[in-house]
Length: 194
Picture 1 (tube, rainbow, N blue to C red):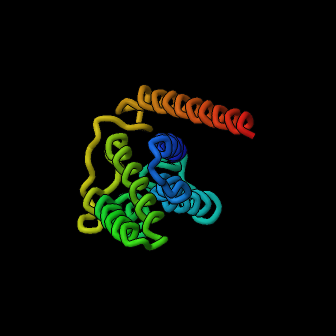
Picture 2: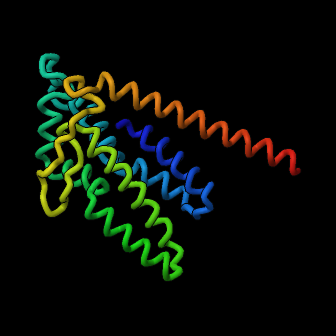
Picture 3: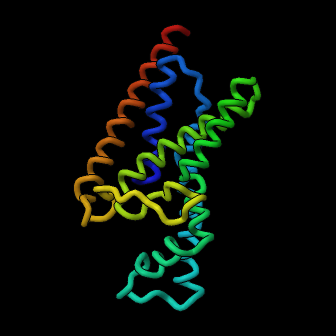
Protein backbone atom coordinates (compact mmCIF):
# COMPACT_ATOMS: atom_id res chain seq x y z
CA UNK A 1 0.00 0.00 0.00
CA UNK A 2 1.17 3.52 -0.72
CA UNK A 3 2.60 5.41 2.26
CA UNK A 4 0.05 8.20 1.91
CA UNK A 5 -2.74 5.62 2.10
CA UNK A 6 -1.41 4.47 5.47
CA UNK A 7 -1.54 8.09 6.64
CA UNK A 8 -5.12 8.54 5.39
CA UNK A 9 -6.31 5.29 7.00
CA UNK A 10 -4.72 6.27 10.31
CA UNK A 11 -6.20 9.77 10.15
CA UNK A 12 -9.60 8.14 9.63
CA UNK A 13 -8.98 5.79 12.59
CA UNK A 14 -7.86 8.77 14.70
CA UNK A 15 -11.11 10.58 13.91
CA UNK A 16 -13.23 7.53 14.73
CA UNK A 17 -11.40 6.94 18.03
CA UNK A 18 -11.82 10.57 19.03
CA UNK A 19 -15.53 10.37 18.22
CA UNK A 20 -15.65 7.55 20.79
CA UNK A 21 -13.89 9.88 23.26
CA UNK A 22 -10.68 7.85 23.28
CA UNK A 23 -7.68 10.05 24.01
CA UNK A 24 -5.28 9.57 21.12
CA UNK A 25 -1.79 11.04 20.77
CA UNK A 26 -2.58 12.19 17.24
CA UNK A 27 0.90 13.34 16.21
CA UNK A 28 2.49 10.07 17.35
CA UNK A 29 -0.34 8.06 15.79
CA UNK A 30 0.06 9.77 12.41
CA UNK A 31 3.86 9.55 12.58
CA UNK A 32 3.59 5.83 13.34
CA UNK A 33 1.50 5.37 10.21
CA UNK A 34 4.36 6.48 7.92
CA UNK A 35 7.46 5.76 10.04
CA UNK A 36 7.89 2.17 8.79
CA UNK A 37 8.36 3.43 5.20
CA UNK A 38 10.66 6.40 5.85
CA UNK A 39 13.95 4.43 6.02
CA UNK A 40 13.24 2.71 2.69
CA UNK A 41 12.34 6.06 1.12
CA UNK A 42 15.69 7.48 2.23
CA UNK A 43 17.57 4.41 0.98
CA UNK A 44 15.70 4.53 -2.34
CA UNK A 45 16.60 8.18 -2.85
CA UNK A 46 20.24 7.29 -2.11
CA UNK A 47 20.00 4.37 -4.55
CA UNK A 48 18.58 6.56 -7.32
CA UNK A 49 21.15 9.32 -6.83
CA UNK A 50 24.03 6.87 -6.58
CA UNK A 51 23.06 4.77 -9.58
CA UNK A 52 22.11 7.68 -11.82
CA UNK A 53 24.95 10.12 -11.16
CA UNK A 54 27.78 8.49 -9.19
CA UNK A 55 28.13 4.80 -10.09
CA UNK A 56 27.87 3.36 -13.56
CA UNK A 57 24.22 3.78 -14.57
CA UNK A 58 21.81 0.89 -14.52
CA UNK A 59 21.01 -0.25 -18.05
CA UNK A 60 17.54 0.19 -19.52
CA UNK A 61 17.27 -3.58 -19.93
CA UNK A 62 17.49 -4.25 -16.18
CA UNK A 63 15.51 -1.17 -15.14
CA UNK A 64 16.21 1.05 -12.16
CA UNK A 65 14.01 -1.06 -9.85
CA UNK A 66 15.15 -4.40 -11.17
CA UNK A 67 17.71 -6.95 -10.07
CA UNK A 68 20.12 -4.49 -8.43
CA UNK A 69 17.45 -2.82 -6.27
CA UNK A 70 16.15 -6.25 -5.25
CA UNK A 71 19.68 -7.28 -4.29
CA UNK A 72 19.86 -4.38 -1.83
CA UNK A 73 16.28 -4.84 -0.59
CA UNK A 74 16.48 -8.59 0.06
CA UNK A 75 20.15 -9.12 0.92
CA UNK A 76 21.90 -5.97 2.17
CA UNK A 77 21.91 -5.90 6.02
CA UNK A 78 21.64 -2.10 6.20
CA UNK A 79 18.55 -2.18 3.97
CA UNK A 80 17.01 -5.15 5.79
CA UNK A 81 17.46 -3.56 9.23
CA UNK A 82 16.37 -0.11 8.10
CA UNK A 83 13.27 -1.28 6.28
CA UNK A 84 12.14 -3.86 8.81
CA UNK A 85 12.86 -2.26 12.17
CA UNK A 86 9.60 -0.29 12.35
CA UNK A 87 7.68 -2.92 10.36
CA UNK A 88 8.61 -5.75 12.75
CA UNK A 89 5.65 -7.08 14.75
CA UNK A 90 7.98 -8.16 17.58
CA UNK A 91 9.57 -4.71 17.89
CA UNK A 92 6.26 -2.88 17.52
CA UNK A 93 4.64 -5.20 20.06
CA UNK A 94 7.45 -4.55 22.55
CA UNK A 95 7.20 -0.78 21.97
CA UNK A 96 3.43 -0.97 22.43
CA UNK A 97 3.74 -2.88 25.70
CA UNK A 98 6.38 -0.44 27.00
CA UNK A 99 4.23 2.52 25.95
CA UNK A 100 1.12 1.04 27.57
CA UNK A 101 3.05 0.27 30.77
CA UNK A 102 4.37 3.86 30.90
CA UNK A 103 0.93 5.28 30.07
CA UNK A 104 -0.67 3.34 32.94
CA UNK A 105 1.98 4.65 35.33
CA UNK A 106 1.46 8.25 34.27
CA UNK A 107 4.68 8.83 32.34
CA UNK A 108 4.12 11.53 29.72
CA UNK A 109 6.04 9.65 27.03
CA UNK A 110 3.94 6.49 27.41
CA UNK A 111 0.94 7.57 25.33
CA UNK A 112 2.97 8.73 22.29
CA UNK A 113 5.04 5.53 22.30
CA UNK A 114 1.90 3.40 22.59
CA UNK A 115 0.05 5.21 19.78
CA UNK A 116 3.13 5.26 17.52
CA UNK A 117 3.53 1.49 17.97
CA UNK A 118 -0.19 0.90 17.38
CA UNK A 119 -0.12 2.85 14.11
CA UNK A 120 3.06 1.05 13.04
CA UNK A 121 1.30 -2.24 13.77
CA UNK A 122 -1.68 -1.21 11.64
CA UNK A 123 0.72 -0.23 8.85
CA UNK A 124 2.47 -3.60 9.08
CA UNK A 125 -0.78 -5.58 9.15
CA UNK A 126 -1.92 -3.86 5.95
CA UNK A 127 1.47 -4.38 4.29
CA UNK A 128 1.47 -8.09 5.14
CA UNK A 129 -1.68 -8.64 3.05
CA UNK A 130 -0.87 -6.20 0.20
CA UNK A 131 2.72 -7.22 -0.60
CA UNK A 132 2.99 -10.45 -2.56
CA UNK A 133 6.61 -11.33 -1.77
CA UNK A 134 8.21 -8.11 -0.52
CA UNK A 135 6.26 -7.50 2.66
CA UNK A 136 7.68 -7.06 6.15
CA UNK A 137 9.81 -9.72 7.79
CA UNK A 138 7.36 -11.17 10.30
CA UNK A 139 9.88 -12.48 12.83
CA UNK A 140 12.53 -9.76 12.50
CA UNK A 141 15.01 -9.41 14.24
CA UNK A 142 14.98 -13.11 15.14
CA UNK A 143 14.58 -14.25 11.51
CA UNK A 144 15.80 -12.23 8.53
CA UNK A 145 13.99 -14.05 5.74
CA UNK A 146 10.42 -15.12 6.65
CA UNK A 147 7.75 -13.12 4.84
CA UNK A 148 4.08 -13.93 4.40
CA UNK A 149 3.25 -14.54 0.73
CA UNK A 150 0.15 -12.42 0.25
CA UNK A 151 -2.41 -13.36 -2.38
CA UNK A 152 -2.26 -9.84 -3.86
CA UNK A 153 0.17 -7.02 -4.46
CA UNK A 154 -0.66 -3.33 -4.41
CA UNK A 155 2.03 -2.64 -7.07
CA UNK A 156 2.64 -5.85 -9.06
CA UNK A 157 0.20 -6.33 -11.94
CA UNK A 158 0.87 -10.09 -11.94
CA UNK A 159 -0.85 -10.27 -8.54
CA UNK A 160 -3.87 -8.03 -8.89
CA UNK A 161 -2.44 -4.51 -8.71
CA UNK A 162 -4.80 -3.53 -11.53
CA UNK A 163 -7.65 -4.11 -9.09
CA UNK A 164 -5.99 -3.44 -5.72
CA UNK A 165 -4.48 -0.04 -6.62
CA UNK A 166 -7.74 1.52 -7.88
CA UNK A 167 -9.59 0.16 -4.83
CA UNK A 168 -6.91 1.64 -2.58
CA UNK A 169 -7.31 5.05 -4.22
CA UNK A 170 -11.11 4.90 -4.03
CA UNK A 171 -10.80 4.11 -0.32
CA UNK A 172 -8.38 7.04 0.08
CA UNK A 173 -10.85 9.36 -1.65
CA UNK A 174 -13.77 8.13 0.47
CA UNK A 175 -11.81 8.62 3.70
CA UNK A 176 -10.64 12.09 2.64
CA UNK A 177 -14.21 13.14 1.80
CA UNK A 178 -15.42 11.75 5.13
CA UNK A 179 -12.68 13.59 7.06
CA UNK A 180 -13.30 16.86 5.20
CA UNK A 181 -17.04 16.62 5.79
CA UNK A 182 -16.46 16.09 9.51
CA UNK A 183 -14.03 18.99 9.66
CA UNK A 184 -16.55 21.27 7.89
CA UNK A 185 -19.33 20.18 10.27
CA UNK A 186 -17.17 20.89 13.32
CA UNK A 187 -16.09 24.24 11.88
CA UNK A 188 -19.70 25.30 11.22
CA UNK A 189 -20.72 24.15 14.69
CA UNK A 190 -17.94 26.16 16.33
CA UNK A 191 -19.00 29.30 14.42
CA UNK A 192 -22.59 28.87 15.57
CA UNK A 193 -21.48 28.50 19.20
CA UNK A 194 -19.16 31.52 18.96
